[in-house]
Length: 346
Ligand SMILES: NC(=O)C1=CN([C@@H]2O[C@H](COP(=O)(O)OP(=O)(O)OC[C@H]3O[C@@H](n4cnc5c(N)ncnc54)[C@H](OP(=O)(O)O)[C@@H]3O)[C@@H](O)[C@H]2O)C=CC1
Ligand SMILES: CC(=O)N[C@@H](CCC(=O)OP(=O)(O)O)C(=O)O
Image (cartoon, protein in one colour):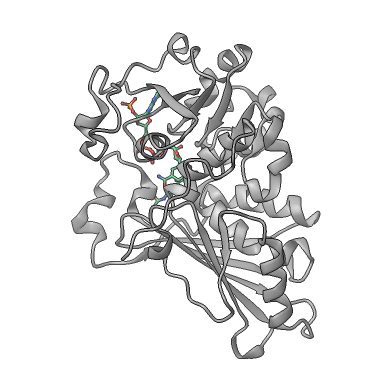
């Protein structure tokens, strides 16, 4: 059995990792950390896990994590990078769900996260954990930086268009909507039921931290500059993410049928990307609890704007499911081990 540690186990992505890993045939969680809940059994805080695990929270100490083969960080940014050199030196493989190692340029990271990077020398070693792009590098990586939730749904929706140079990279527009769990479990007035329910809002238009991450990823696959207008929104739902992506065709003779075919071919061998029949409107509910990304392509009124719809569960394909997918690839396990989860109905 692969011995797994989870740093940040009281948070939504940390406990979601545990929910997935208790059903993983080859992995066992041997350490899960919390500073606030040290000594408390996880299933007393999260009764949905009763009967599945008897593990209790321990403090996030390198000595404890050193017994693990793989450590997941499900912590806010600026935590993983402070423990990373010690863990890597001990040969431990790490999957970081936070943003600490997603952006390769330390100065750009500091600009968006508002503090200096603690270990810029390690950045080059980190592999960006979007398996649909970097599967080969993930296999041998010691450190995988899991993409953010918005970057996962936006990049998967744009990839086939951009890899094939079909659209104008300087005029991309992404309107994406997240459920409230995207903001984490920490109490904030903005996320109270009375603030969020029966309401809908955009936020972060002057600049969201996921913008440089998405542009870096799309630039990597296009080989040219990419200019994205990215507007995140908050919807009154707990889980789920829906991205509506716009792109202008370079050649108006490119048919929707050929684009549909391109998407189907691009993702034919991807276990966690489902291209829906032309004209579909995926709902976030159809991926809730699962590691699936569902995508549909449109060309309204046969004009030059392609509209791609992409849905994920922010906590699964947008975070913990993708993290386990990365672990499976790193360890040469079946990529879908522990991840054959059918979405909830309704
Ligand atoms: N929520 C989502 O949809 C997504 C989240 N992410 C990223 O995943 C990470 C975790 O997110 P989420 O689960 O929502 O966060 P939460 O706020 O829900 O949980 C954070 C966890 O980290 C622990 N923690 C906080 N500070 C420290 C510290 N200094 N040292 C050790 N542990 C610490 C907390 O426990 P304690 O304080 O008791 O130690 C808690 O268990 C973040 O980087 C987030 O950006 C990525 C994609 C999607
Ligand atoms: C609804 C909501 O607040 N969402 C979060 C998503 C952040 C996240 O999960 O991503 P990182 O891992 O990059 O922090 C936000 O917009 O900041």
